[in-house]
Length: 355
Image (cartoon, rainbow, N blue to C red; front, side, top):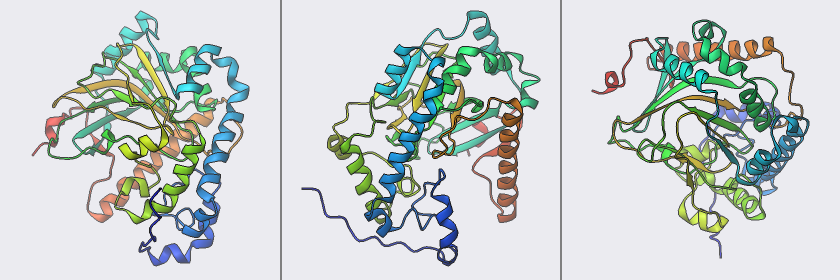
């Protein structure tokens, strides 16, 4: 017998109650936080099935968005992605392009941003129009048709997702717990992340792990989502309360899921995944790192249209994103602290962060 659902108790800021009517308008968007959103986190509405309804609608709309894009991916890859929730493509780029891309990513000296989380540091360089002027191989990658088509079909979106040169340094702060090592779902709706690995990925450098088939909305998964929507604010799990549900061993058994697959792949491999499925970063040796071209597509899950493939719209997206980062910088400065993603200069090194 499942345990009875506990009474939910959470102290919300008065402003959330005053603005309650306005939060209703966030329901047809990607808003996911039970903690910050009093409508999404409302116990009565979730008893009536609000969260599960959003999960079902978002999954159905993604299928609609992918339908006109099926010509972009061969039938075998579409079948694998639909069955497993992730796809691995080895020897992806022509050798000459890959060599230039790898050299460019390793040697680039560009202003970047870093995030310190758990025992790891993530270093990213945003590939926008300004940056690409000095990175011709990266520009060629973003123009490479098989890459564009792969990203477009899996994300159900014709426009380019945000793309970065990313290097993850692990084991930098060994006394801290890394939340990325716990199996989790990013959001209530399908989202995609991909890695074009520029170095061999071995078991000891934190490979991407994914539970095959965990993106599918089985009856067990929907029941689990329903129960979690009622329980999530009663615990101390900040990430689940923010809408990124964590998975423990008991949950895995309840859902009847297989073990996670570790994506140990050679360089010049693309791994792309629907991160509504359960995934995490694997454990790694202290002082290890991995380099990749990383991107994410997380759009409004209730928009049934794949959008328009106009470059000007990509530039608008990137301008909005950079403006968001600047506002975060300004807010952090005003409060006297650092933003979660802060700027670092071109000579930055991970050892700079160690006391």
